[in-house]
Image 1 (tube, rainbow over the protein chains, first blue to last red):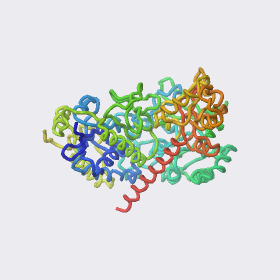
Image 2: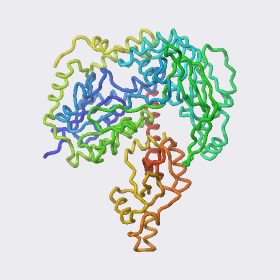
Image 3: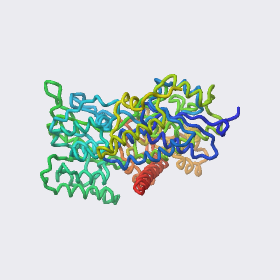
Image 4: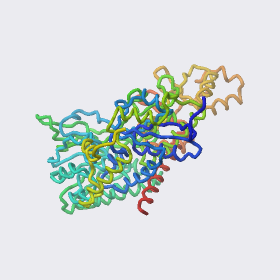
Length: 470
Length: 144
């Protein structure tokens, strides 16, 4: 067999997903000068970029600027984008095996972990990720309802999603109006009666996951005073000893900033953002209508594990915090893809350096790969996906050199294109996405906003007008 | 980042051996899986020791009959174990300070994985690379 990988017989690769890991995989493949390659990227939504569009907070536009690098990748003539084409529904794994030599799953971690406590499903208790998807205009989440008439809100967790949610809840309408937050969320937040937002961390200030820039930003909000309880940020002996030993400057600074906040007296801004430490939710309490009215917290103390990590241990000390709205943000988790080996405990596709493995034999499944969060779990920043994708591409090229690739019956691009258009006549090309992008930016310009997003699939398809059918 | 996510990233089941098995079997396992240490577990899957290639080499230098002896005779008994919720950083510190190269990971008393010094170095390298990459992208965006 003559192996593909030349300009005359290019390696045909399907990438599922269009977030950072998907684009970095494409970039690494396209920049190989010794490789003849063609990439088709499949995205369930008409719009690309995954969490860059649907996760990164609307008031953090600079982080979204990474999309410019993705545009460059997409401009390569060997790259094609098939938006609004769902893997497992519009095209199946069996279809892809007929048309591609290699398939890469870069679908991310799309669901949240549960707290596992009573009352978690009461009305008014939500995964933070749904709120994020809603305010970022993700079409799947536009019908979610969040009762922003409640005055007191708890955000469980102190990671970056929790920080984003708490900050967006505390932003003033004017601050929000300068972002690309969805129109629907902007209007709902304009009417918001939220007065107190509690962020709840299990451990102490020295162990909190948020970064120093994030915590500084929380202390400089126009419409909310930050409140920190002095007794909760005082370092215990174990934390003090650990910090002294590690001499970790970022953590020292974090503790310093929090101690500074503990000294502040509220200046009378309309809202309060209260950072709580060393507390874990044990139960959500509901009223007769099944609506959350309070969260029961247990106070924790820290103890050191054998490996030296400081972990929370519950005391007998309970506390009830009256809140009418709860967002849990205790981690993301991957979602099973039809026909793809998945480790449910870890929320990832079983893989070795990006090669999908059969979970029973631990042997690679020929032609299938994973990149990004679905490969390694939800850790790291956007840029972490670049070395991650590089590792997967190395595995792909090693396998190509060995001839361990799929042998599709129809490797020619026209065959794939015809199949996709037959299955999803409304599929969206990259050029069409760029038109949507320009329309969104133009709608925003009038209002002094970075963009005004389309938040419904029908709206996006209508904006593209009558389409050329292949 | 915690050990659970590191285990997810390597998605590799731990390779274990029983104390009554022979050193020969241990050598075969180390070689077959291309690894440097085996966790020794009892019938309940709880770690009772660890045996490394170094332990075996040290013993072999003294006693050429080492291969027929049971693992229990030369394994290290006071093994330090980690938990899925341990921070990557504390495990990195532990390995550096105690000069150990493998930490078995235990959940509810049962062995669920093993973290090697190589895994920890890789996780830290990837973390820093990712941060540098993100910062560079943002600085470039600012310059435009």
